[in-house]
Length: 115
Image (cartoon, helix red, strand yellow):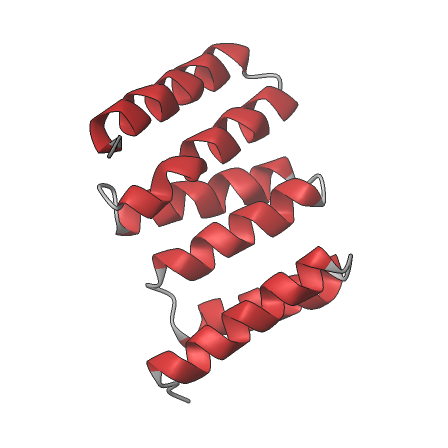
């Protein structure tokens, strides 16, 4: 099954609506479905990282954040993935790596700061 960009956008918005309304499991199912259909989409990986982090699934959050960064390492919208990585690593008791991810976030923000 192939989705148009508009169809994918609508589904991603639906996922965010689920998240905003505390329907994390529905959001997770939707984003996992999108990943299955289009595994190379950084936006979907970012969404999965947020859902997993919010649900306390640090390993899964870390994997999705790293995948988003691998797909689009220089994309300005990926700046938050460094924070997700930092929080996930901290939850996994990997504090040195967590600090490095937080530092990467600050560096990324400085490099992409428009103001």
